[in-house]
Amino acid sequence: MPNVESISAAPPSSQLAIAHLGLGAFHRAHQAVYLERYRQRSGDVGWGVCSANLRSSIGLVDDLAEAGYRYHVAEYANSQHLTLREIGVIEETLFSGRDHAGDWGRDREALLARLASADTRIVTLTVTEKGYFLNPASGELRSDDSMIIEDIASPQQPRTAPGLLVEALARRREAVIPPFTVLSCDNMPDNGTRTRQAVVQLAEYRDPTLARWIADEVAFPCSMVDRIVPAMTDTDFERLAALGIADANAVVCEAFSQWVVEDHFPQGRPSWEAEGVEMVADVAPFETMKLRMLNGSHSLLAYLGALAGIETVVDGIHQAELRTLLRRYMLEEAAPTLDMPEGIDLVAYADSLLARFANDSLRHRLQQIAMDGSQKLPQRWLSGTLERAGTGQPSPCVALGMAAWIRYTAGEDLQGNRYTVDDPLAKRFAQLHQRHDSSSRSDAEALVAAFLAMDDVVPSELAKNDEFALAVTAAYQALIQKSFSEALAAL
Image 1 (cartoon, rainbow, N blue to C red):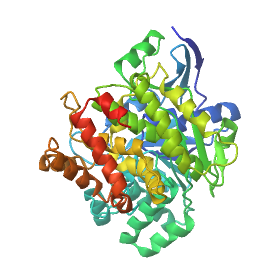
Image 2 (spheres, helix red, strand yellow):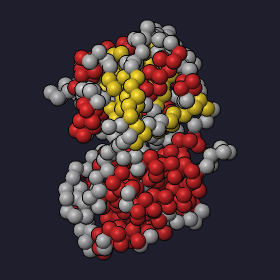
Image 3 (cartoon, rainbow, N blue to C red):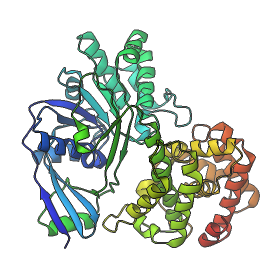
């Protein structure tokens, strides 16, 4: 039984000044926790949260409402130390996605009214990379996506996060209400800039004057978020039940948490810095460090580990050859691409990440990390690899990772066990694998070439780099022709 520190939620807020799009586990274990801690220590009750789910998980929205909007966050330093927090800062939950019957937007009008209200001063987002409907390589709005097409045709009944923001901002502009600040909390480089791109480009289809107003008047600060929040398992609920916590909405996460935010909030903000949030002028160095070192090594472990039949991060990190690979990747391929402020020790950061991955209280499934690779890999691996290629430096760890990702997208591990590939481009991946029999050398080369030619994933300059293409091809052939250990040893 771990040592447990239990903390109850503060009294309700007097005003819902923050709206959040993306009512998921990460939001509930990260931004909501910072706000709860701030409210408890400051007594400032003016920053309650309305949190909306834009996907098909209508159950969570209703379950939180039935629980009086209270839930628990279990923060594990390791299996022996636990802080158990009750969170009450989310005081309204809405659903604007497609329900199980296929109907859209049960609470969409209520959400738009909340967003358009003068009380709402900040809108935060955790909708994952694909929720912005941007081409991951170019950053342009995916105007050919079916949901974006529908938002262009019916802008007052939006289905996407960018569409909701455009409609809400249009209503505020018409009512002469100052715009809210839009704060992306997703793992994307320049996430504020990219959010602005999605919203402004979508607004252009509706009204160029509105688009210019958004571009000129709306603040889109960038942020970097960091906390490992695995999907809940039966074991997690059983551990909490043993502590007397019967909470279907609970979240389990690591004790470590970091939030770095560009300080640009024209309508005001909570004094987050009192809770350890780093309010800075430029978040880019911290954002890139986290994406390339933490998220990049997570993806490397996810694809290689999943192919080897390894289930979780902690299982993978305890294999010496994988741990060595991750440290080599972080220090030899990721860290040299970073330009950090004075005083940041990247060796110490790499070692701290490995220690966090080894947290024995978390069961972070590799299949969860492996989701949406086409949206994640450009910023986690490929932008840094392109920089290295431009100066003639090889990236063998990334080449092996790309080979593992390509093999992973076949939907079958190296032992022949099948799984579902959860990615917006999964159908395209399946077609490429059907077209090329990778058991032959020539078709393996053609398959790798076809994946590298996907210019909405791989930067064209990197795809044209012969040294990188050859390294990915060699690593792919090693994975399918040799043992897993031999493929790692080939590095």
